[in-house]
Each structure stands twice: as C-alpha cells, then as structure tokens.
Image (tube, rainbow, N blue to C red; front, side, top):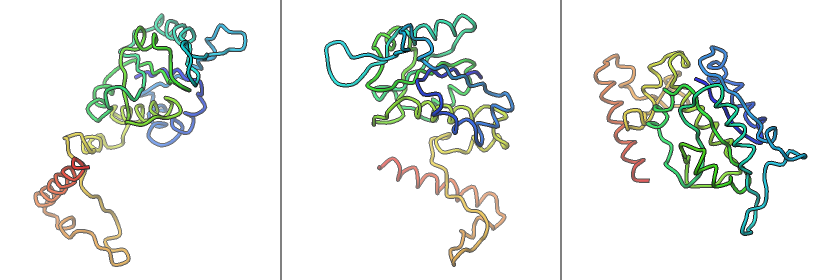
Amino acid sequence: MRIDILTLFPELFKGVFDTSILKKATKKNLVQIFFHNIRDYSKKKNKQSDDYPYGGGPGMVLMIQPIYDCIRKLKKDRNYDEIIFFTPDAEKFNQKTANKYSLKKNLIIICGHYKGIDERIRKKIVSKEISIGDYVLTGGELPAAVFCDAIIRLIPGVLGNESSALSDSFQDDLISPPLYTRPRSFNGWKIPEILISGDKNKIDDWKEKKSIKRTKKFKKL
C-alpha cells in the first residue's frame, strides 16, 4: 500500500510513523508513506497556501492551486483508489470502513487546516470525505494519523499475530471482552477463575457474553 499525505505540517507525523506497529509496517515495506508539503506547490513568491475567504468572515482558507498541482503531479505516476478529505460533515469512520480501505493500493489524503479548504477541492478533486467524530480539530493531520493507524494494522503481515486484528472491537459488531494478564492476583484483585479453567468452550462462552454485555452498554451511551 502507498499513502500520499498532503499537509502544511509534515513534522506532525514524525512520532506517529516512527514508532511501534506503523514503524514495523514501513520497515517491512508493507506500506509506504509519503508526505507532501502543500507550500512547496504554491506559485506565490512567499509560498503562501491560504487566503481570506470570499464574502468575508473570520479565518483563512487553503487555496486550490497548490493542492491541485500536487495531486496532478502524483496522478501522472500512478492511479489512486481514493482521494480522501477529513471533515466533520461526512460519513463517520468505523471498523468496516477501515477494513475496506486496508485493501486499497494507493491513497491520497488531504489534510485541511485553519478554517478549511476551498470548496472546489471538495467538489472537483476529493473522491471520499470521512469524519472521525462530531468535533473540530486544528487540522486534518490527527484524523489522517487515526485513519492510517486503523487501516495499516489490518494489512496482512503488519501484526505479529494476524488473528489479533480479527478479534478487535467492532470486527464482529461487538466490543471486545475484558482482558487480563499476569499476575493472577494483585493487591487482592483476582482474575475471573473461568479464564484459568482450561475449558475452551466455557471460556469462549464467557467472552461472548461479556462482549454482548459491553456492546449493549456502549449502544446505550
């Protein structure tokens, strides 16, 4: 998989992709991440990439020209499955969506900033809009990081145990059951005896019941 990320602040991603599972994925060459500074494509002398909105109002808006030119250059070398933009007024991101995009080959992500982006980018360039929640962030870098983490970990070979991803919350529309590890007792707090019973059928039944209970509670929130 190849992911091209358009952003004003590539440095915001350093910690995200340089540690843990995502770092291992890139080292194994299971995914390639490329960052493109939107300012580098600006035709303004000072590399300006934003401007005041037509019609007035507070805030600055990302200009169409740098983003358009960057994407046009990228598309000359390969075809892209999707050009993604994160915005609150879009379809909510969930595990099913993550599963879908983990199977894609080439993706472009546009990170908005300030007040937003020129609407013509959304209408004429973006092919998919996604929301990670009903709230506003400073820019699209954090949503992009969330999106990449969620889909990359699903790529075969990324996790040490591939079955681990299949047991994640929401994969079967259920929240994962409670998890415990050593020691068996800590400060007098003991783990459920069923988990050390050795009876796989009873353990699986216990986990399923706990998952259903947690899911019902989650859906009431």
